[in-house]
Structure formats: structure tokens, C-alpha cells
Image (cartoon, rainbow, N blue to C red; front, side):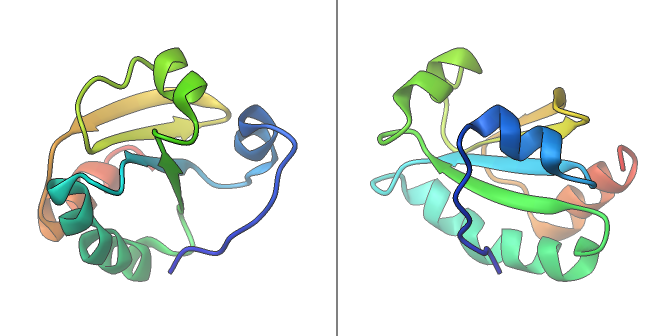
Length: 105
């Protein structure tokens, strides 16, 4: 599902994307975050040409978590043209997440 790529900055990654970016802010120790893995894989399979999914470990990138006010995990933030347009806290099942995202893509 997720491909690991290196970017000089988070902002560069967002602005260089030609499709909206769904960022999964997570932590390794977070049980609900682990539940989102297979869900995001299914979402990626359904929306792969219209969306990029990126995972950000809030333990490693604390400054990004602070910048985007991530207080609950998991938190998904949808970015379009580098700007946050939607925020989802907690676990959503695949059909609900796909439906919500399709209205914004």
C-alpha cells in the first residue's frame, strides 16, 4: 500500500502531489491506529488514482503533530493543494471512510 519516499519537508510532499493527500497521524503503541492499517489499504485500493495516503508517526514527528494539533489518535487529515480540508479522529470503517472522502475528492 504505502510507498516510502523521502522529502525535504512535509510541505514539499503535500505541494508536489498531483492528487489530494490523506495523512494518517498515528503511533506504534496505539491500538486503534493499528486497526486503521487494513482499512487504509482497502481505501487505497478503491481510490488509488484519486488519492495518496501517507502515514506520519507522531512519536517521530512531534513538530508536525503539534503544528496540525493532533491530540487524538488515529487522526486522518485530508490535504488538497497543500491545505487541510477535512479531519477525522478515531476509526472509521472502509465504506464510511470511502464515502466521506469521495465527497471531497
